[in-house]
Length: 337
Image (cartoon, rainbow, N blue to C red; front, top):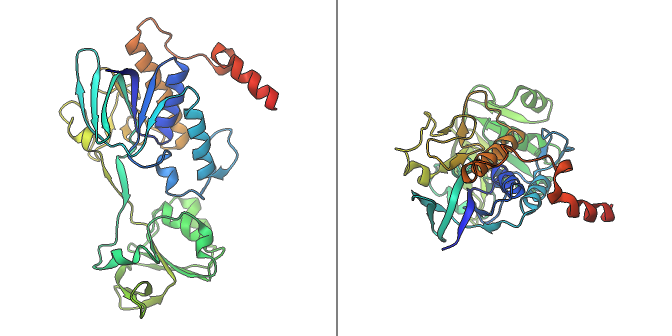
C-alpha cells in the first residue's frame, strides 16, 4: 500500500500551488481532479485577460493556467485527472480516500476543491439542450467564434459583463438580457460596459427559443414580455451549480457556513487533524477572494501538513533564493537565458 505525504483534492490554482509548495517542503504529492484537465475555473474563460496577480503582466487565463500547471509539476507529483473524490476515511496513521478511479492513501490531505464540482446552470426551458451542439453556449472558449454575429447574452454578473464587453468589439450586435433592474458586476466593469454599443434590457428574461426551419439552431429568442430578438448565438451566464459530496459526507466533522463553504481557523486548519484546506471552498475572517490570495493559503496548507508530519520541521519553507533545492534548476535556467 503506497502512502503519499499529502493528497491534494482539486487541481485549480490553489491545488496547483499547494502541489508546488508541498514539493518544495520535500513532501511526496498526489493530486486528484474531477475534470479532465487541470486549471479549475480558469478553463471556463481561457481568453479572459487576468490583471490582478502580483508581478504577472496581464495575460489570458489559458496562459496563466499553463504556467501554474508547469510550476505544479516542478517536484514531480502524481496527477490524476477525471478522478472524483467520494469518501475520506481517517485511520490511525493515514487517510483512505476512495474515488471513482481507485483508492488513495496519504498521511495528510489538502482540500482545494474550489466550490466543488462546477457545472454551468442550464436554461430551464424545454428542448433547450438540443441547441447546445449548435448556437447555445454556457462557456466561451474563443471570442473569435462570435465575429460579425448577432449575439444575445443572458445574465448580469461579472462573467456575462466580461463576455459582453469583449464580444461587442467584434460582433455585429450584442443584446444583454438581465432579469433584475441592475447589473451585479464590479462597478468599474459595469461602467466600461455602458460605454459599449450594447442593447441592455433590464427586468427581462428568456421565455422560449424559436428554432430555424431545420430545427437544429436558435433563430429567435422570445423574451417574457413577448418581444423577440433575432440571433446567431445565445450565451447564458446564470452562475454555476456545485457539488462537493465528499465534504457533505463529513458534515459531522467539518464546520460549514450558510453557503456550504468550509470554515477554517488560522486560515487553513479544519477541525480534523491532518486535513487542511485552501482556495474558494474556504471561509474565514478577512479572506481575500482573488487568485493571488489562494497562493498564501496553499503555502500555509502545505506548511501545516509538513509540521503535522514532522513537528521538528521548519514552520515555513525557505525563500527560493536561499534554497539549495533550486541550485541545479537555477543553473539550467541561467544557461537558457
